[in-house]
Image (cartoon, rainbow, N blue to C red; front, side, top):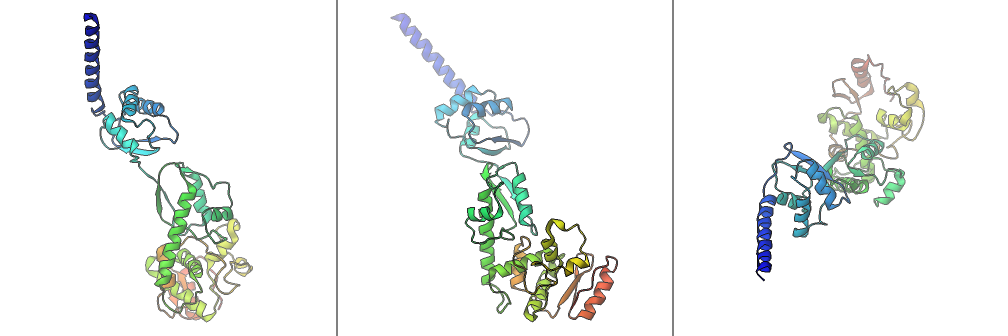
Amino acid sequence: MCTLKRSVLLASTVILLFAGWFFYHVNTAVRIPVVPYEFSIKSGSSLRNVARQLADAAVLSDAWSFVLLSRIMGNASSLKAGNYKLSENTSPLQLLEYITEGNVNQSEIKFIEGWTFRQLRKTLNEHPAIQHDTEKLNDQDILQLIGANETVAEGLFFPDTYFFEQGSSDTVILKQAYRTMQDNLASAWAASTKDLPLANPYQALILASIIEKETGKETDRNKIAGVFINRLRLGMLLQTDPTIIYGLGEEFDGNLRKKDLLTDHEYNTYTRPGLPPTPIAMPGLASIKAALNPAKTDALYFVAKGNGESHFSSNLADHNRAVAKYQKKNKQPVVLP
């Protein structure tokens, strides 16, 4: 009987000592390798694999105590996948709370004003933190997948920086960019100047995409919009090079030639009146607002001065003189009336 009591007492003492040590151990900060220290937990990783990963990286002093702590706390199956960043030394208990609460360091992707949808897709497909569900789909399938009513994807996605958790589907990002564009376009349309020669928000989006590609300096944006609106009102050809370049696609070698201006296709605004059938790029909010609130001007022409600015003219004679002055070295064609 005495032997049993001694055994029970010894076992109790061992348990109490272990409990005290374990409590101290899991609440003691471990010195992280570098500050800040970033690491990732992949989707589907087991508790043991995560513990071993962190122990191997010296974020934990050992793996087994972290596994035991997770089971005691009931968090063994609650680890959240994602990117994490530690800014200071962290105890195992703090680390467990950190990765079960999902305090992930979000990844980001940036879509730039003036990009085409092809450029956007390339950036999506090359991002290592994204799940590529649309990589093998065509543009029309993507539009259907995200619930868009349009049949052409160009210009429908808002250029911005989007944040997401590692492993997020590219469809989630595309939906967000599409809805953001729809919301911004609707708000700008509601606040637009009255009696514009634009039938609907989509036409405004088309014009905004042209303005985006033509603007070299921010202060010229509304003036450029004013020129295009004046031309649309008068029934003049828009005669804007970016639409021709877009229509040429991969055939464009960096040089726009006279034959390109004369060869008719649906994006040639030198041969066809009105707007092209679709946007030619992703316009930013400034270009959308400019298209719907253009500057009041009598200008019908503009030419790049070579320093990012444009020179504006109200008649063809003045414009041709400006072309000769600013673009003589580049041998740019004189715009036809």
